[in-house]
Length: 352
Image 1 (cartoon, rainbow, N blue to C red):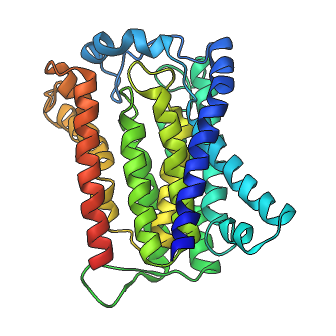
Image 2: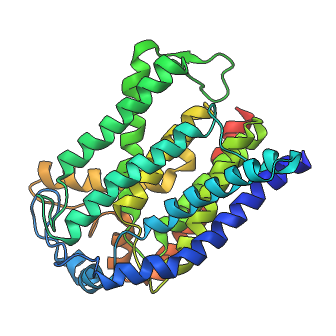
Image 3: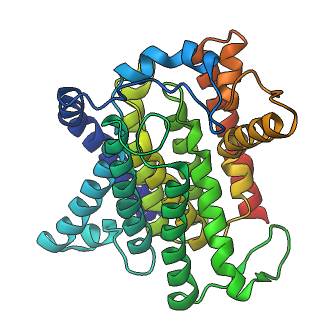
Protein backbone atom coordinates (compact mmCIF):
# COMPACT_ATOMS: atom_id res chain seq x y z
CA UNK A 1 0.00 0.00 0.00
CA UNK A 2 2.68 2.64 0.87
CA UNK A 3 4.56 1.93 -2.37
CA UNK A 4 1.33 2.36 -4.33
CA UNK A 5 0.77 5.76 -2.74
CA UNK A 6 4.34 6.76 -3.60
CA UNK A 7 3.78 5.50 -7.14
CA UNK A 8 0.80 7.83 -7.51
CA UNK A 9 2.17 10.93 -5.79
CA UNK A 10 5.78 10.94 -7.01
CA UNK A 11 5.05 10.92 -10.79
CA UNK A 12 2.35 13.54 -10.22
CA UNK A 13 4.89 15.81 -8.52
CA UNK A 14 7.41 15.13 -11.28
CA UNK A 15 4.81 16.06 -13.92
CA UNK A 16 4.25 19.37 -12.13
CA UNK A 17 7.99 20.11 -12.07
CA UNK A 18 8.40 19.09 -15.71
CA UNK A 19 5.51 21.37 -16.65
CA UNK A 20 7.05 24.29 -14.78
CA UNK A 21 10.42 23.66 -16.51
CA UNK A 22 9.09 23.40 -20.06
CA UNK A 23 6.65 26.32 -19.78
CA UNK A 24 9.23 29.09 -20.45
CA UNK A 25 10.26 27.28 -23.62
CA UNK A 26 6.66 26.77 -24.76
CA UNK A 27 5.68 30.33 -23.85
CA UNK A 28 8.69 31.75 -25.72
CA UNK A 29 7.53 30.22 -28.99
CA UNK A 30 3.85 30.98 -28.37
CA UNK A 31 4.68 34.68 -28.03
CA UNK A 32 7.36 34.65 -30.73
CA UNK A 33 4.91 33.39 -33.33
CA UNK A 34 1.96 35.41 -31.93
CA UNK A 35 -0.28 32.41 -31.42
CA UNK A 36 -3.44 34.32 -30.61
CA UNK A 37 -6.58 35.01 -32.60
CA UNK A 38 -6.20 37.81 -35.09
CA UNK A 39 -9.74 39.06 -34.46
CA UNK A 40 -12.05 38.73 -31.45
CA UNK A 41 -15.19 36.63 -31.64
CA UNK A 42 -18.17 38.76 -32.59
CA UNK A 43 -20.81 36.15 -33.44
CA UNK A 44 -22.43 33.25 -31.61
CA UNK A 45 -23.46 29.80 -32.78
CA UNK A 46 -26.52 31.17 -34.57
CA UNK A 47 -24.54 33.90 -36.30
CA UNK A 48 -26.00 36.59 -34.05
CA UNK A 49 -23.92 39.41 -32.55
CA UNK A 50 -22.33 38.93 -29.12
CA UNK A 51 -21.73 42.51 -27.91
CA UNK A 52 -21.53 41.65 -24.19
CA UNK A 53 -18.93 38.93 -24.70
CA UNK A 54 -17.00 41.15 -27.08
CA UNK A 55 -16.99 43.96 -24.53
CA UNK A 56 -15.73 41.65 -21.77
CA UNK A 57 -13.05 39.77 -23.69
CA UNK A 58 -12.10 41.47 -26.94
CA UNK A 59 -8.65 42.51 -25.67
CA UNK A 60 -7.77 39.15 -24.07
CA UNK A 61 -8.86 37.14 -27.12
CA UNK A 62 -6.42 38.87 -29.44
CA UNK A 63 -3.52 39.39 -27.05
CA UNK A 64 -3.18 36.11 -25.16
CA UNK A 65 -1.63 33.04 -26.87
CA UNK A 66 -3.57 29.83 -27.33
CA UNK A 67 -2.14 26.29 -27.26
CA UNK A 68 -1.03 26.42 -23.63
CA UNK A 69 -2.39 22.87 -23.39
CA UNK A 70 0.95 21.76 -24.86
CA UNK A 71 2.35 22.23 -21.35
CA UNK A 72 -0.15 19.70 -20.00
CA UNK A 73 0.16 16.85 -22.46
CA UNK A 74 3.84 17.57 -22.97
CA UNK A 75 4.59 17.21 -19.26
CA UNK A 76 2.45 14.05 -19.07
CA UNK A 77 4.21 12.37 -21.99
CA UNK A 78 7.67 13.39 -20.75
CA UNK A 79 6.93 12.12 -17.24
CA UNK A 80 5.60 8.83 -18.58
CA UNK A 81 8.74 8.40 -20.70
CA UNK A 82 11.04 9.26 -17.79
CA UNK A 83 9.61 6.61 -15.48
CA UNK A 84 9.45 4.04 -18.29
CA UNK A 85 13.07 4.60 -19.33
CA UNK A 86 14.19 4.58 -15.68
CA UNK A 87 12.69 1.10 -15.26
CA UNK A 88 14.76 -0.11 -18.23
CA UNK A 89 18.07 1.68 -17.59
CA UNK A 90 18.04 1.19 -13.80
CA UNK A 91 16.08 -2.04 -13.31
CA UNK A 92 15.03 -2.64 -9.73
CA UNK A 93 11.88 -3.41 -7.80
CA UNK A 94 11.39 0.28 -7.04
CA UNK A 95 11.96 1.60 -10.57
CA UNK A 96 9.80 -1.10 -12.16
CA UNK A 97 7.07 -0.46 -9.63
CA UNK A 98 7.05 3.26 -10.42
CA UNK A 99 6.65 2.62 -14.15
CA UNK A 100 2.95 3.17 -14.87
CA UNK A 101 3.05 2.49 -18.61
CA UNK A 102 1.01 -0.68 -19.06
CA UNK A 103 -0.87 -2.28 -21.94
CA UNK A 104 -4.02 -3.03 -19.98
CA UNK A 105 -4.43 0.29 -18.15
CA UNK A 106 -2.58 3.30 -19.55
CA UNK A 107 -1.69 2.73 -23.21
CA UNK A 108 -5.20 3.55 -24.44
CA UNK A 109 -5.71 6.79 -22.46
CA UNK A 110 -2.19 7.95 -23.37
CA UNK A 111 -2.81 7.26 -27.06
CA UNK A 112 -6.13 9.12 -26.77
CA UNK A 113 -4.45 12.07 -25.07
CA UNK A 114 -1.82 12.38 -27.77
CA UNK A 115 -4.11 11.88 -30.79
CA UNK A 116 -6.90 14.17 -29.56
CA UNK A 117 -4.39 16.82 -28.51
CA UNK A 118 -2.81 16.82 -31.97
CA UNK A 119 -6.25 17.27 -33.57
CA UNK A 120 -6.89 20.15 -31.19
CA UNK A 121 -3.49 21.62 -31.99
CA UNK A 122 -4.36 21.68 -35.69
CA UNK A 123 -7.60 23.50 -34.87
CA UNK A 124 -5.69 26.03 -32.75
CA UNK A 125 -3.23 26.68 -35.57
CA UNK A 126 -6.09 27.26 -38.00
CA UNK A 127 -7.73 29.64 -35.55
CA UNK A 128 -4.65 31.78 -35.03
CA UNK A 129 -4.13 31.93 -38.78
CA UNK A 130 -7.74 32.97 -39.24
CA UNK A 131 -8.57 30.11 -41.58
CA UNK A 132 -11.53 27.78 -41.70
CA UNK A 133 -15.22 28.37 -41.26
CA UNK A 134 -15.33 28.83 -37.50
CA UNK A 135 -16.24 32.30 -36.27
CA UNK A 136 -12.68 33.62 -35.99
CA UNK A 137 -10.96 30.92 -38.00
CA UNK A 138 -10.33 27.25 -37.29
CA UNK A 139 -12.39 24.15 -37.89
CA UNK A 140 -16.14 24.56 -38.11
CA UNK A 141 -18.20 23.34 -35.16
CA UNK A 142 -19.59 20.55 -37.35
CA UNK A 143 -16.10 19.35 -38.30
CA UNK A 144 -14.87 19.46 -34.72
CA UNK A 145 -17.88 17.42 -33.59
CA UNK A 146 -17.21 14.99 -36.41
CA UNK A 147 -13.56 14.58 -35.38
CA UNK A 148 -14.49 14.03 -31.74
CA UNK A 149 -17.06 11.42 -32.77
CA UNK A 150 -14.43 9.74 -34.94
CA UNK A 151 -12.01 9.56 -32.00
CA UNK A 152 -14.88 8.27 -29.90
CA UNK A 153 -15.71 5.62 -32.51
CA UNK A 154 -12.13 4.33 -32.49
CA UNK A 155 -12.12 4.24 -28.69
CA UNK A 156 -15.54 2.57 -28.54
CA UNK A 157 -14.47 -0.04 -31.08
CA UNK A 158 -11.41 -0.86 -28.98
CA UNK A 159 -13.42 -1.10 -25.76
CA UNK A 160 -16.16 -3.23 -27.32
CA UNK A 161 -14.19 -5.60 -29.54
CA UNK A 162 -10.74 -5.71 -27.90
CA UNK A 163 -11.50 -5.19 -24.22
CA UNK A 164 -15.00 -6.73 -24.46
CA UNK A 165 -16.73 -3.90 -22.63
CA UNK A 166 -20.48 -3.84 -23.29
CA UNK A 167 -22.06 -2.74 -20.02
CA UNK A 168 -22.01 0.14 -17.56
CA UNK A 169 -22.21 0.18 -13.80
CA UNK A 170 -25.16 2.04 -12.31
CA UNK A 171 -24.45 3.48 -8.83
CA UNK A 172 -26.13 1.69 -5.92
CA UNK A 173 -27.21 -1.21 -8.17
CA UNK A 174 -25.28 -4.46 -7.90
CA UNK A 175 -25.74 -5.77 -11.42
CA UNK A 176 -24.25 -3.86 -14.34
CA UNK A 177 -26.53 -2.68 -17.15
CA UNK A 178 -25.89 -4.49 -20.42
CA UNK A 179 -25.85 -2.25 -23.50
CA UNK A 180 -24.64 -4.70 -26.13
CA UNK A 181 -23.74 -3.01 -29.41
CA UNK A 182 -25.33 0.20 -28.10
CA UNK A 183 -22.21 0.56 -25.97
CA UNK A 184 -20.46 2.04 -29.01
CA UNK A 185 -22.79 5.03 -29.59
CA UNK A 186 -23.06 5.51 -25.82
CA UNK A 187 -19.28 5.79 -25.56
CA UNK A 188 -19.23 8.29 -28.43
CA UNK A 189 -22.01 10.34 -26.82
CA UNK A 190 -20.14 10.52 -23.49
CA UNK A 191 -16.96 11.70 -25.22
CA UNK A 192 -18.89 14.32 -27.19
CA UNK A 193 -20.71 15.56 -24.08
CA UNK A 194 -17.40 16.04 -22.27
CA UNK A 195 -15.90 17.82 -25.26
CA UNK A 196 -18.84 20.23 -25.30
CA UNK A 197 -17.82 21.17 -21.76
CA UNK A 198 -14.65 22.63 -23.26
CA UNK A 199 -16.50 25.96 -23.45
CA UNK A 200 -15.46 26.34 -19.81
CA UNK A 201 -12.01 27.40 -21.07
CA UNK A 202 -13.05 31.05 -21.14
CA UNK A 203 -11.65 32.69 -18.00
CA UNK A 204 -8.14 32.87 -16.60
CA UNK A 205 -7.55 29.76 -14.49
CA UNK A 206 -11.08 28.41 -14.76
CA UNK A 207 -10.59 25.31 -16.92
CA UNK A 208 -7.32 24.33 -15.24
CA UNK A 209 -8.75 24.32 -11.73
CA UNK A 210 -11.84 22.37 -12.76
CA UNK A 211 -9.96 19.74 -14.77
CA UNK A 212 -7.42 19.23 -11.96
CA UNK A 213 -10.27 18.44 -9.54
CA UNK A 214 -11.87 16.00 -11.99
CA UNK A 215 -8.70 14.00 -12.66
CA UNK A 216 -7.83 13.99 -8.96
CA UNK A 217 -11.23 12.42 -8.28
CA UNK A 218 -10.59 9.67 -10.82
CA UNK A 219 -7.13 9.10 -9.35
CA UNK A 220 -8.88 8.39 -6.06
CA UNK A 221 -11.49 6.14 -7.67
CA UNK A 222 -8.89 4.10 -9.57
CA UNK A 223 -6.73 3.80 -6.44
CA UNK A 224 -9.57 2.26 -4.41
CA UNK A 225 -10.29 -0.07 -7.33
CA UNK A 226 -6.63 -1.14 -7.20
CA UNK A 227 -6.08 0.10 -10.76
CA UNK A 228 -2.87 1.77 -9.68
CA UNK A 229 -1.53 2.60 -13.14
CA UNK A 230 -4.75 4.43 -14.06
CA UNK A 231 -4.66 6.20 -10.70
CA UNK A 232 -1.08 7.27 -11.38
CA UNK A 233 -1.85 8.52 -14.88
CA UNK A 234 -4.84 10.49 -13.56
CA UNK A 235 -2.62 12.03 -10.87
CA UNK A 236 0.07 12.81 -13.47
CA UNK A 237 -2.57 14.57 -15.58
CA UNK A 238 -3.58 16.57 -12.52
CA UNK A 239 0.08 17.46 -11.92
CA UNK A 240 0.53 18.64 -15.50
CA UNK A 241 -2.67 20.67 -15.26
CA UNK A 242 -1.47 22.34 -12.06
CA UNK A 243 1.77 23.33 -13.80
CA UNK A 244 -0.32 24.91 -16.56
CA UNK A 245 -2.52 26.56 -13.93
CA UNK A 246 0.53 28.14 -12.28
CA UNK A 247 0.90 30.29 -15.40
CA UNK A 248 -2.80 30.50 -16.24
CA UNK A 249 -4.08 32.21 -13.11
CA UNK A 250 -4.98 35.89 -13.61
CA UNK A 251 -3.51 37.41 -15.63
CA UNK A 252 -3.19 34.32 -17.84
CA UNK A 253 0.07 33.93 -19.70
CA UNK A 254 -1.71 31.71 -22.23
CA UNK A 255 -4.95 29.80 -22.73
CA UNK A 256 -5.36 26.03 -22.83
CA UNK A 257 -6.87 26.03 -26.31
CA UNK A 258 -8.36 23.09 -28.17
CA UNK A 259 -5.10 21.14 -27.89
CA UNK A 260 -5.68 21.12 -24.15
CA UNK A 261 -9.44 20.72 -23.82
CA UNK A 262 -9.90 18.22 -26.65
CA UNK A 263 -7.07 16.04 -25.35
CA UNK A 264 -8.19 16.19 -21.72
CA UNK A 265 -11.90 15.59 -22.30
CA UNK A 266 -11.28 12.66 -24.65
CA UNK A 267 -8.83 11.11 -22.17
CA UNK A 268 -11.27 11.68 -19.32
CA UNK A 269 -13.92 9.68 -21.18
CA UNK A 270 -11.50 6.77 -21.66
CA UNK A 271 -10.43 6.79 -18.00
CA UNK A 272 -14.06 6.92 -16.84
CA UNK A 273 -14.90 3.82 -18.90
CA UNK A 274 -11.75 1.98 -17.79
CA UNK A 275 -12.78 2.48 -14.16
CA UNK A 276 -16.38 1.54 -15.10
CA UNK A 277 -17.58 4.65 -13.28
CA UNK A 278 -19.11 6.56 -16.17
CA UNK A 279 -22.38 7.77 -14.69
CA UNK A 280 -20.66 9.52 -11.73
CA UNK A 281 -19.17 11.78 -14.43
CA UNK A 282 -22.44 13.71 -14.30
CA UNK A 283 -21.47 14.75 -10.78
CA UNK A 284 -17.67 14.77 -10.96
CA UNK A 285 -17.66 16.84 -14.16
CA UNK A 286 -20.70 18.91 -13.13
CA UNK A 287 -19.09 22.30 -13.98
CA UNK A 288 -18.39 21.09 -17.53
CA UNK A 289 -21.97 20.01 -18.05
CA UNK A 290 -23.34 23.21 -16.53
CA UNK A 291 -21.21 25.27 -18.91
CA UNK A 292 -22.19 23.35 -22.04
CA UNK A 293 -25.80 23.08 -20.85
CA UNK A 294 -26.05 26.84 -20.46
CA UNK A 295 -24.93 27.27 -24.08
CA UNK A 296 -27.52 24.75 -25.29
CA UNK A 297 -30.29 26.38 -23.26
CA UNK A 298 -29.31 29.85 -24.48
CA UNK A 299 -29.20 28.72 -28.12
CA UNK A 300 -32.56 26.95 -27.95
CA UNK A 301 -34.14 29.94 -26.21
CA UNK A 302 -32.95 32.31 -28.91
CA UNK A 303 -34.13 29.99 -31.65
CA UNK A 304 -37.52 29.10 -30.20
CA UNK A 305 -38.41 32.36 -28.44
CA UNK A 306 -37.64 34.91 -31.15
CA UNK A 307 -34.19 35.85 -29.89
CA UNK A 308 -35.06 36.01 -26.18
CA UNK A 309 -32.23 34.98 -23.87
CA UNK A 310 -32.13 33.10 -20.57
CA UNK A 311 -28.66 34.35 -19.62
CA UNK A 312 -27.10 37.71 -20.29
CA UNK A 313 -24.37 35.81 -22.12
CA UNK A 314 -23.41 32.14 -22.34
CA UNK A 315 -21.56 30.05 -21.16
CA UNK A 316 -22.82 30.71 -17.67
CA UNK A 317 -19.47 31.91 -16.26
CA UNK A 318 -19.69 34.88 -18.64
CA UNK A 319 -23.23 35.53 -17.36
CA UNK A 320 -21.82 36.11 -13.88
CA UNK A 321 -19.19 38.39 -15.37
CA UNK A 322 -21.92 40.39 -17.09
CA UNK A 323 -23.68 40.70 -13.71
CA UNK A 324 -20.59 42.52 -12.43
CA UNK A 325 -18.64 39.74 -10.74
CA UNK A 326 -14.86 40.11 -11.20
CA UNK A 327 -13.49 37.26 -13.31
CA UNK A 328 -11.30 36.01 -10.44
CA UNK A 329 -14.38 35.70 -8.21
CA UNK A 330 -16.19 33.65 -10.85
CA UNK A 331 -13.14 31.42 -11.28
CA UNK A 332 -12.58 30.79 -7.58
CA UNK A 333 -16.24 30.06 -6.89
CA UNK A 334 -16.32 27.63 -9.80
CA UNK A 335 -13.20 25.99 -8.34
CA UNK A 336 -14.99 25.52 -5.02
CA UNK A 337 -18.06 24.08 -6.71
CA UNK A 338 -15.84 21.83 -8.82
CA UNK A 339 -13.98 20.44 -5.80
CA UNK A 340 -17.20 19.75 -3.88
CA UNK A 341 -18.84 17.96 -6.82
CA UNK A 342 -15.64 16.01 -7.53
CA UNK A 343 -15.70 14.75 -3.93
CA UNK A 344 -19.40 13.94 -4.09
CA UNK A 345 -18.97 12.09 -7.37
CA UNK A 346 -16.04 10.12 -5.96
CA UNK A 347 -18.18 9.12 -2.97
CA UNK A 348 -20.99 7.98 -5.27
CA UNK A 349 -18.54 5.94 -7.35
CA UNK A 350 -16.95 4.27 -4.34
CA UNK A 351 -20.08 3.65 -2.26
CA UNK A 352 -22.32 2.82 -5.22
